[in-house]
Length: 185
Image 1 (cartoon, helix red, strand yellow):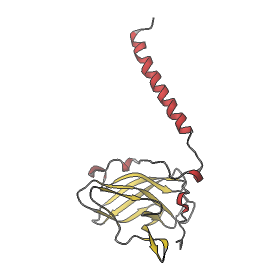
Image 2: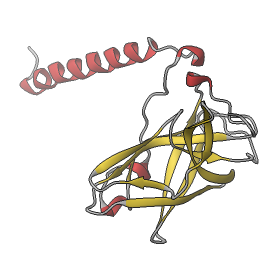
Image 3: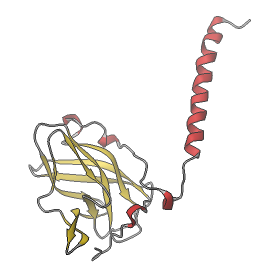
Image 4: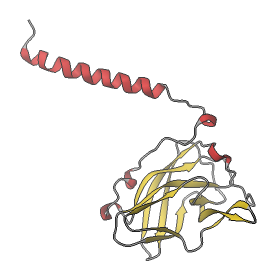
């Protein structure tokens, strides 16, 4: 006859094992083919956790960078402002390239990418989304390839002079068929 201690831990251990098995089977069912992916899976970075003053000026959710071998690419994510005042991002930088704040806008009946005049404003108690086909942080003239899985430190500069750094993971992404090349409209 088993002791009461052994019997007490056998059931929770079996439940934990079953949960881990279910999670690993579900993970194996996802597609690794980047051509079928609509968007990369969300990630969180240690510097991105939380949207309060202790974590920085803004909360950064699901930061990622489109993997690229050369030229240009872009960083995306959600910028969360839990504060009582609007926040304006006036610049960004990273160790692999100069950066610019960009937007997509209509010009002469065509959608074009251009610098974001006045910066990216994140209204008080709201979220601004950086996404393909919209506002984004443009990495210009890469000094090295940015491969899937690479982690890049991105530093935001705000209108009041404060800065905040977060980590973004590079991911393959073919959705929207962007081509970040000079002169691309």
